[in-house]
View 1 (cartoon, rainbow, N blue to C red):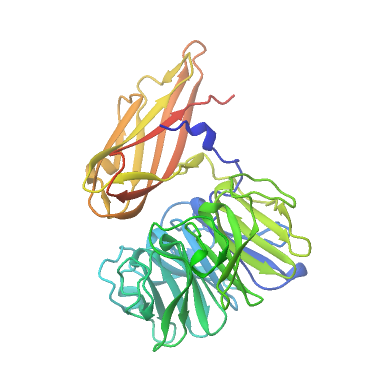
View 2 (tube, rainbow, N blue to C red):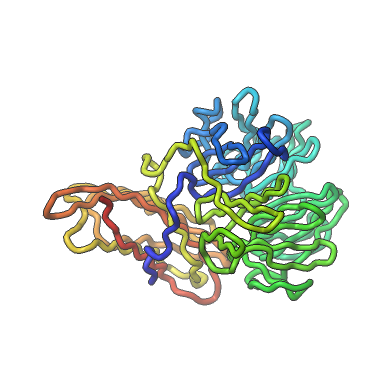
Length: 468
């Protein structure tokens, strides 16, 4: 069991920012585009962090429309082409486009239903699955379709979307485009001739030819569950669940997410070396910086911008001396505590669950002396998982009229592989003597590895800390 107070991240006005890109301009015209993922919005700032525009009302949804009223569900990757910002609306299973001049967002691909069959077609009639990142090249968009373990392509001329690389079987297999295997691709970049992919579940960086008769090749990385933190060359190299990759100056900059590092990889020599990060979680600035699961990267001029996801921050690297600062975001509305938003989100270490287990998620809520649940007030929870770990529909979202300190949610682990649990809970509690009552809203994200062994019970211990 794990005492979660040790895992809390600093409170900022961003909530788990997944990706960051720039418009490749410096000075007053320079802009950052930040996917403020858990706040369901895109934040546009200048290079000093002054908010220029916010796309999205912060509510979870898939409403098209003007910037103030549009809604998203955990958006991740973005790509800018002139005045059009393409957005991977990950948990809506949609591709959206924001017109920065007209200030309008519309859906261009997906139905809002998660795809299962990996068959292409007319973009707005095709189910897709967890698009995590994308890149616009000429009249096409290449999409890291994490849920399908594939790269897809959308032709903007005829609005056809279809698989481009990967058979759909999760693995690390090189070869012809549609024979190869990928494993939850989550980052994408290009040198103009090839796509480079952060293949997160394989802990690998892959190269994919921009030629429909081309191939998929592994730059570094070995296989599923074969991960670590090792610099070197070729088969010596180990990464751990990289989510971001950026091609710049003939090198690949990689957000080696679970190692809390930024790596530099030479795609020709197939070498990898640590550039920034200690390997431990933290949010220290300076010449020996620390990060907490960085996921996105952008470079403009002499500055690198890092989406330091679990620190809820954007970090800035001065590439002239490799010193790191934290960007202060100015003019951003605080969405914590708004209905539907956990006031704090906690990322937990990965847990192992045995295959075919009839298990349960067990949340233990612990109050300090003199505090308890508010009499007569319900507890609400909702939980999201994946198709490898099944939770009965009646247990996915509930209101409990008489909450208890232990909440148990049963599941079935039906397929080996990796998954993620997202649990959000809202409850009321009071100080018994003074009668002061507080609403607490908290969320957890728990990576799950389903394999031959493990614990069928996933424990989450939460110690309530009363607010003044």
